[in-house]
Image 1 (spheres, rainbow, N blue to C red):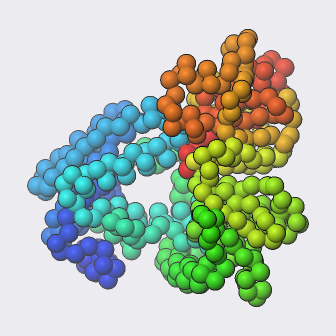
Image 2 (cartoon, one colour):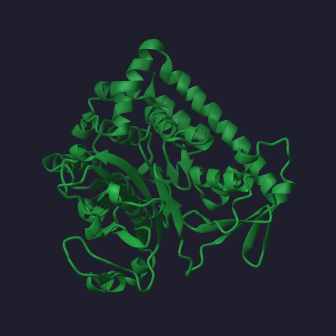
Image 3 (cartoon, rainbow, N blue to C red):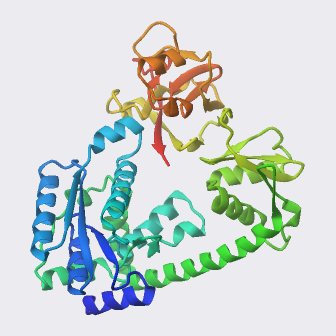
Length: 448
């Protein structure tokens, strides 16, 4: 396989970049991005290099940065480096490491593009990354859209190595004597992606040696199927959704009875308003059981409710409490721009009581279900962990200098009428873990 010829052919066939484009290459120092840098330079494109140092791996991060600097200077192309306080950002927002790093880097790429006139931003994902994403989504539960892997391009973002496998890229790096760094975290099976890469995929390849090529074809077909569905859903959307006074109405009786109703409703709610699959499923169950009166279902930007057999959708009003119920055993719920994951554990499995603010560990046996998640309200109070007296939520937020926009997004988790957790900040002392605790509910907040 001639990687350079295939690279140039792939870009032309998919119209990823034109000769006049100014392309910002995102280069970590790993083999994928270092090979991408070589291919773009050898192909004669005008490029610059952006390197993100997330300062998460000590000396390794510094060595990555130095390698990228040397290579950019060797090729004579502009290079930009930024060091991020990733851990500080995680503590501030409650995001996972992956989410925080993603948001930080893409915001910086946009900034560089505006400042220096880059017309395209290139990411070095390849087909094996897409296959891993397929399995991650499959294991977490997904619709067809989640099985289409990683897109080749989105706006000004392109992924010009999606035709190549990890093996192809490594062989090119060796043949061309391209230096690269190996991220030690890639060998850790702590992460689901690595478990799939190091454990699941090699076992499948023992059964099917042509697995990568077959999956490339499968993902291509699934992507085509999703594009076909998107076109069909757009036609259905035009026929069944009306808008009046800022409220969208989905007329269920206008959906062809030959279509799978659950699937059509999910596609309408997800593609138009970003509702998650389990929220859509709950809404459909309520619709089928005629039990939806008064219930409200939320995405991060919209609220839906049922009215006389129709689904009404509107942007979330500023004064909406965004109140949802959490039944025992529920794996997650959504609140504003966040998702809360619930995990029941035995106290013996808890390695430490000290956790970051975006994680709460509470005595599960003290909880009364269903739990309630909602925005905080004036008059709410709790007993902050480590204290013995009541404190109003409003006073707590003022004392901790929480900005007004964050106050508006502040949620509370309640058991009955008692606050269990001021979400992302402090648990209530009444629900703390003690020597008598046997079962623990661990709750993790992540930004979505």
